[in-house]
Length: 261
Image (tube, rainbow, N blue to C red):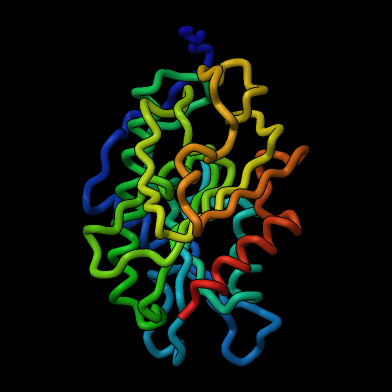
């Protein structure tokens, strides 16, 4: 059944170029474990971080933010990961692209897919940039939340020399619905995957009146059902932004510690 497209689309830029991608990378949030003080972290950007500043190399979590950009919640989550697991966290800043297409749901699938294409290109571009960084230890995982969860689920490392060690997908169900033309997830059955969803998610649970998939479960049941390395965490009454709930922190830390070198 067709849904009424009562949302709105703003912005005219639907494709990246080298300059816009470089800006997304240069201004990414970079959170590193503090070498001298484990109670604190270092927050910087790849453009500011210098070779002389770091003697250690870290496994790195590439994190795709949601449609609201690098929020306070994402900064808090990144600090937790760096402090508790010893992983660095990099969050490419998609909002650095001036006049980039944005939306208020629901809009046409073609508009969502224009955004998803840009987000996927950012994540791949920034992952390639990792390999030249003095703080990168050669091991990485990929994560994303909401809109960024689509980019994380679709991330394809075949263009890179090394495959990601895990994927962490928050608040995106990896199912067909109003938000994608089709899921296009790249989640091999031998890849450790964590999917965390609220059963009351206002965008991707069956409670959403414009979900446009009567058979949806609201989480990545079908795509992960044959993956012995996958974990699915379902939280009955959690909000859409659930990154910093204690259960989510514990699940994220566990999978990163499990795949750490």
